[in-house]
Amino acid sequence: MRKYLFLFTFLLLSAKSFAQDKDFNYKFYGQIRTDFYYNSRANEETVDGLFYMYPKDKVYDATGKDLNATANGSFYTLYTRLGIDVQGPKLGRAKTSAKVEMDFRGSGTTFSTVRLRHAYLNLDWGKPSLLLGQTWHPLYGDVAPQILNLNMGAPFQPFSRAPQIRFRYKAGDIQLTGAAIWQSQYLSQGPDGKSQKYIKKVVYPKSILVQITKEATG
Image (cartoon, rainbow, N blue to C red; front, top):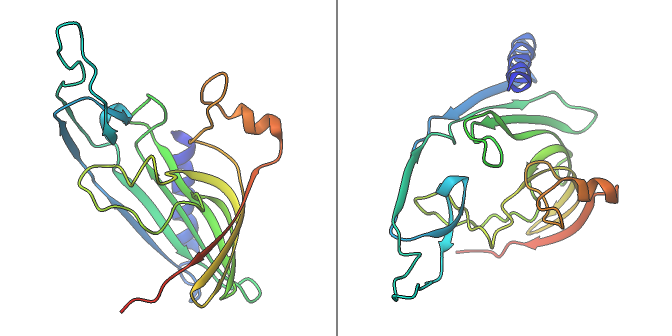
């Protein structure tokens, strides 16, 4: 937790030192979020039930009682969030920007500790851009459901933020993305359960190439 607070303090001091630069600006943002949930039956879930996926199938005991027909609920403030967006000076012909964002989700079954969500530098030349750092997985689409509880379309959406080197090229309604992706908080399953060691032992990162075409509306 101390290293994240140090990073946030460093960014604050750096932002103040560059505040006089006309090509430099920054914006702090955040939210105080509370989540109360109630479910009438057991579900496939994570974060102690806060991240809901789908209800479990009916499972009957010898008397015909559905073992998953059990209510559950709780109240959390884990997704309270702090962040900073930075617009920097040009680097050659590229516009520079950066983001650092954190919440208090923690990791695994450890809650209420600081977790890094985003930390990246982006170089934008107009049509092409290069991102270095951690942000949403490139396969995390622009289409996500607007629902009351925390879900974002999982498990069908690839809900993941990952360290990556991402190159993106935009030309009209077509967007091409190529990326080398590592793992940090969202880990692969393997013989020994979820672990970062699988991608570490392979040595090279996962690579993807995606084309997205946006249809005209109206």
